[in-house]
Length: 477
Ligand code: GLN
Image 1 (cartoon, rainbow, N blue to C red):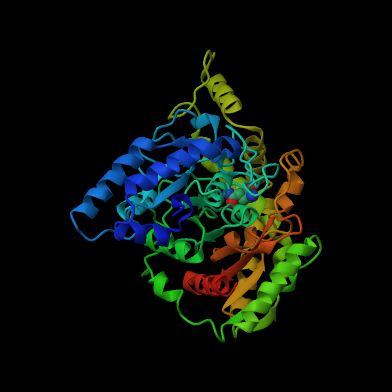
Image 2 (image 1 turned 90 degrees about the vertical axis):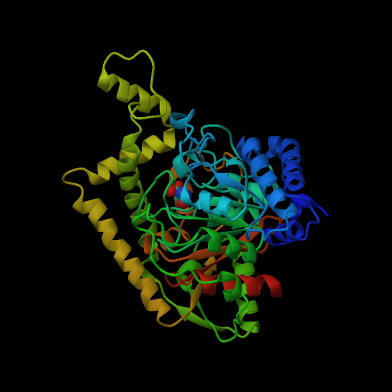
């Protein structure tokens, strides 16, 4: 049995049946990380102590013959924007270079309570701002499918770790595509839940009205398992929804026959790479052959999504990142002359170039006299985009689209051209602006053997439907 290649489902079964111990499984991952991660760069910290003590706890429970929790002994990696008690958490930034949090974020706490073993913290773009992981203050991540290419971002470490068998599953965050796009680039499954489905407590904020926490996994069933564990109301996050969490494991087994699938022409326009188009079109054919009804829909405001996203996201970021001032916690510049000099030097030395660009853009968009022209207008576009989806979802149960217009690009290719980098987010930012759930699943490879991802969007809080479709596709393919 290749221990590091196991899915969550297989790992928890093997542990429950006492074929392997949680301790041996964790050790297998430590060894694999030590051997392979120097080439990939997915991990920022390996939390051996925390992982070993959790694994020992699970093994003791197994020996005693007690019923094991649902994710008993499953080794997971955590994106570095998610707070972990006692384990350094930097958000990929120098400004939090030595930050060791005193508490756990809710998603990690729930995973551990379900028996998961936290292997460590995964590399990402600084404050989750980016699409290539090249904005990490620490090191780049290499795509395991082709080391000369980016893994996507900002959850690049999470996607690469799952793709390279350096974790069974990972948590990521998605503000404009940061779970789905790297999942697509690395050939794994990535799920952005509905806004409010998963608590954001302990997620280092980028743009609070767009931020989501979700899983990256090897299979759709694994994504269902993780979502089920982390979802639900949390008194620590007032935006978390007080709704019952369905049993996604039984949801995914329901038949997909006669589900109505929408295809929007706005997602198949100019700039879509031909192999990606072909792969997504043949995936749509596959749904048709599974008995789904394929229906054309229109999302006419899609073309305004990028400017609206980059205004709302930067505006919220400029406000959220004001807290990093050298006073409360994190980095403080040495040898300063005054308080304002301390602020200036701390932020100048602590933040990287992309983060500074966004703080400036966002501050400008919010400034007196410009607010109506930029921020308010962007919020109006957001409403129009949400209405587009509402109108489409009156006719269909789900909407499918490519996750990204192109497969993984080369390291260094776009890093000096922020606009080109931003434009590549065209297919993912809409779901964040509307708050609807979206999953990216692998649907093939390009001629250069690079993974291609397809997204399935669902109605608010209907993760069950998109997981069901993804699971049916995965089985049929
Ligand atoms: N690539 C997008 C950005 O740079 C999305 C990032 C994210 O989802 N965190 O803002």
